Image 1 (cartoon, helix red, strand yellow):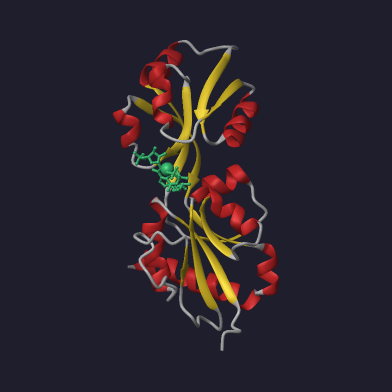
Image 2 (image 1 turned 90 degrees about the vertical axis):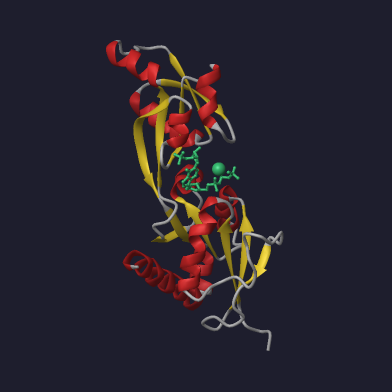
Length: 226
Ligand code: PRT
Ligand code: MG
């Protein structure tokens, strides 16, 4: 019988994926092939999981929000940084407690020291980031004029070559900052990855979506206690 409902779960490839797999394993929700090796973007999961057929989409972290918001996926896993920046219309029922990091304003050591002795008044500052919205919001609240320089990656380079005065980026160990002579100046938010759900799926596939949320909740608890 192939009339089982299909439940589609969007996974972020890249650094979150590795930490997602043990949670999925705990919940009995493993993909049928090695998603870290395959070049397939859509991979089957269990054929009969709480009465539905599971499939996974393996996509760029920033695209997970879009797939879930538009209903191309019923559920997904996304970093809180991206949820706050992109503000998709999705439910966020569970903190998975993986992909932990923080979103911070960082600057060269010399800049921070110089401004400690002589605070910059007025003037504009240039911030390199891929978090345009969150950066703009923060500086607006501070009453500081900020020019956002949008970059797609390796933000840490921008202050070194005079492209920007500061960066707003994710920091985990701080090693990348250190290697590039930068320091954390202000921590804006603590970040972890979240399970997200399409609001319509929440209604039309309520039983299956709830089952995934509950199993994943137990998986998070299980991982915490292990
Ligand atoms: O890298 P790519 O452009 O393909 O995609 P992406 O950056 O959107 O995805 P990915 O996989 O790099 O990140 C996905 C999610 O992982 C982010 O949205 C965060 O929620 C989470 N996360 C957790 C991180 C980090 N830790 C992290 N360390 N995302 C990025 N980093 C970067 C950080 O910006 C720094 O440049 O890793 C670098 C090293 O960090 P340190 O402090 O450990 O040196
Ligand atoms: Mg990255």
